[in-house]
Image (cartoon, rainbow, N blue to C red; front, side, top):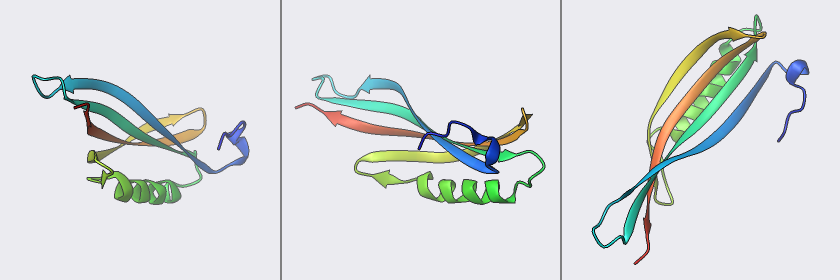
Length: 104
């Protein structure tokens, strides 16, 4: 869902999938490991309290941390908090992932 103006919201989240790199796993070029990053950014209006943002972060953490889904292996999830900016507190959950593509 696209949010054109978040000023009327107290909380919102953004999901980003970032492709990173790939690595050949076999001499025959039949298997390649694809790497990437999942980033869930949670925004809370400054001075609205961070409990709801942390609750959302906890739910996202429990979804991605160590998940194996259709051959995609998600690694450990990390949580970082940025200083408030333009009236918003931001929490970022980052999870590296990889999957193997077989062509043979």
